[in-house]
Amino acid sequence: MRLRSFNAPSIAAALALVKAELGPDAIILNTEQIGGAFKVTAALDRDAILAQRTPASALEPLDAIAQALEFHRVAPALAERLTHQAATVLLESPHQALAAALRARFPVQPLTDRQPTRPIMLVGLPGAGKTATLAKLLARAKLRRWSGVAITCDVIKAGAIEQLGTYTKALQVPAYRAKDAATLTRAVAQAPAGAFVIIDTGGCNPLDAGDLAHVTALAEAVKAEMVLVMAAGGCPVESAELGQLFAEAGATRLIPTRIDAARRYGGILAAAETGRLAFAEFGVSPEIANGLEIIGADRLADWLLETTTSRSSTPSLPPDQRRQAYGTRS
Image 1 (cartoon, rainbow, N blue to C red):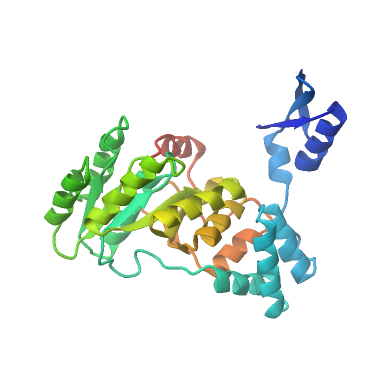
Image 2 (image 1 turned 90 degrees about the horizontal axis):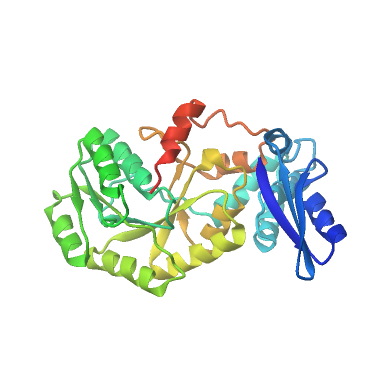
């Protein structure tokens, strides 16, 4: 069940907000008066959430694109740009038109299509999935027979080192700890020549200048490329601001995670657009071996336009294993 709270000057106005946002199937759980305003708590059950649909294919191509972007809460300015771009190349299929628009605005630069020549440093909010993403990148590197090295700078969070150790032991990859720029420099220096070096960091609050300066200093110390890891499904406004802040700190690419656990992708589009970040791999599953995929404009258009909640091309786990896999987050 998804809970939402709505505040308005009157009960009638609050109920109108509930209906506009959640639809007629919303269940009112509580109403209360706080000072001169009224707060209404409402919810949708799981069936009502999954019953919501993205546009039907019977719509006119531009209408289908516009409705899909609205469903995904794509920021109006970006939605207008994408729709305009689609109109200039409009074919019979909305998928083809939207894919062309996405291709023009969002570059794709995977980390594992060719062996990086610089260390890769993963940064992002707490819980974004950085450590799991590190393991998935190392798994992809192993398939390409690249030597890999894992380094964690997250030496404070309880269980962080143990989590990384579990991954690197399974992948048979050497792992190091680095508490500051000096020890990070020594750890990178110990990596074999040509190794795929991936650096994990603790959760960073980009609104805290000290936090941001810390990860920036770490990256500069070893000339690492900073890559933002962001969970899908976030607020587009917040995501846009985060994308811009991390980009100003030096991030150049974005790895969206938990794609399979989100239904709206306006947030990751906003982050990439505002920060001018190229999409790297996408986290499509909690599975380490095949949990990352390189997603181009055609596949992304599929996700935005699809009319069902299932994604047959995305690996899935049984519910009990999925809860366990998502239970440990970096």
